[in-house]
Amino acid sequence: MEHVNDGGPALSDDGPSAPSAPCAGGGLSEALADALAPVAAGSAADFSVAVLETSSGASGVHGDGGYATASVVKVGILAALLLGAQDEGRRLTAEERAYAGVMIEESDNDAATALLRTIGGAAGLDAAHRRLGLTATRTGDGGRWGLTLTTAADQLTLLRAIFTDGSVLSDRARTYLRTLMGRVIDRQSWGVSAAADGNGPGTRLKNGWMPRDTTGLWVVNSVGEVTAAGQAFLVAVLSEGNADLDSGVELVERVARTAVATARAYASR
Image 1 (spheres, one colour):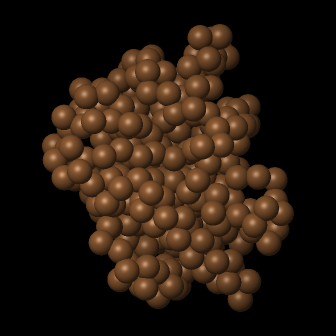
Image 2 (cartoon, rainbow, N blue to C red):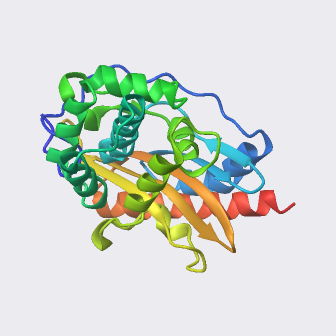
């Protein structure tokens, strides 16, 4: 079984791989491949990244295949809860809001497990993901939400639903999600935030990390919105096979910085 720091209760490494998503964005995907080749060559871990420059719509993906979400799935759990509340024509209860707050801001695992039950378990989360446009994400069996398998492209799709117009999520729901992602506690504010330059409204993110019991290697992920040079970027970085948490954070941050710099240059051509 997993000894989970952040990925959820009673996790195991077993389960089918998520289907690979095709690379999107054409030229930007090619530019990402070139820019990230030295990063890949210098790392024993596997990684994938998807990035969108929101004003131009330029997007690209580097890497494919399925990655365990660890706690980045908590964004999807909250989105599913908000979709359900929309369907019922109601606001979240006080208890749901309390769970949502600590789940996103502090990455509380018990809150995630409670809200997963509220939305109907794995079937409910999978259904919500489909409504949000995620096509290659499957929830872990038996409530093992940290072993949900996803792709960087799917995580970018989820970020689009939260941070751009035309979403099935209401404006109120999107604002609520963005607000909580902007309140993540300081010790969990690493990751895609490394690509921000400090001149924007602040990073809004969610991270996930957990060791694999079968290998001792780490899953380290980060997804969110950052601002650099006055431009907003949505970024999802997934990685697996890291020697430890610190090296995983270093890899994710290097990938995020490289991806945002590449997308910025591509969008300004």
